[in-house]
Length: 160
View: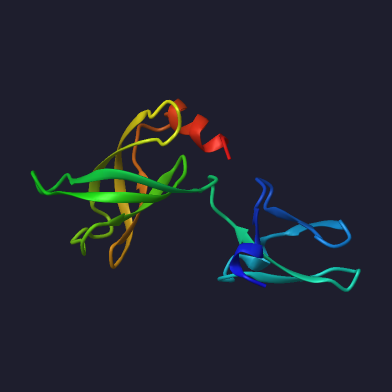
């Protein structure tokens, strides 16, 4: 089984996850809490004897894989910016790859700008907080006003 065969399941608001056997279609719902600390795919045993793997996603927002060119700007260092490629995107944040090793640090505020790759090509400009830095990969969460909603981003993420 390759990584692309592993289905991603999202945890519902009530903390449960629904497993559906790809062979027989049998479904069952159970608490996702027992999988919270588990990294990587989880093996599920079905009553039909089929064993399949799923990835359980605890994220608050759906995350879409992307490949969008953009720029990031350091808020604390005026004039310090770099090119980036947004690799994944959600309503709450994004992950991007810098063109060179970055000096960004977790907790730092940045501004990011990129355009969506749909027919609207809507420009997205966001303030964000860096959460993780691994080599050239940076994960961040958006830091907009509480309760704000970006319609362009929302529409883009709903289109699979």
